[in-house]
Image (tube, rainbow, N blue to C red; front, side, top):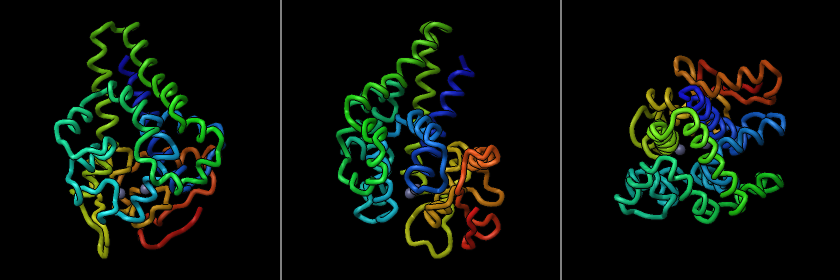
Length: 267
Ligand SMILES: [Zn+2]
Ligand SMILES: [Zn+2]
């Protein structure tokens, strides 16, 4: 049971970090279509592919300005964390949503294909793919996202009984909140880089628990780089990309030089 939840957590995390973020949004590497689509399907709790990519590209173009959809410096930490999904500044609602665990999947199944769609035009390349276009529609998105709830709950009940709900709750709460912390904490606490114009930070704890995404200042400096953690900054999503490169599944991998982040190479 624990192994199953851990595998689910890692696959969903990779779906977001590697699939949605580094691959689909920033085109930092290429993968075979079957693998890319599998990763995106695992990352579906992050939102629809078109909405996620459009919003994230707009975030990079307007980071920590009044236009940023989720900056803790405009609207507060809770709104940047998850309140922006709901379009609310109400703290109690954002806290309830943050702690909703697997119930959030049921809320998101209705919410995510319908809200925050104003930047979809920035993801026309994603919308050009018929699978992502289909997955971004309300009914297919809701149906597929329900599988993210139904499959773990069914397996948990069959193996551990009702006591397994607590573990499932913790798994989903961690998955959502660690991901949301990249929007909130990664623009609030941590190390700034010299000459930076936004508030993105490098945060060692988030770097570790969020699969390398917490090296967020590095990422904002070189958004197209497949590697976020540089020398001495562990980035396990990057290690997976390296392994996929070794297997010749990942190609056209773009990286920032590990010794000098301003010196870039392409591999
Ligand atoms: Zn950011
Ligand atoms: Zn990014």
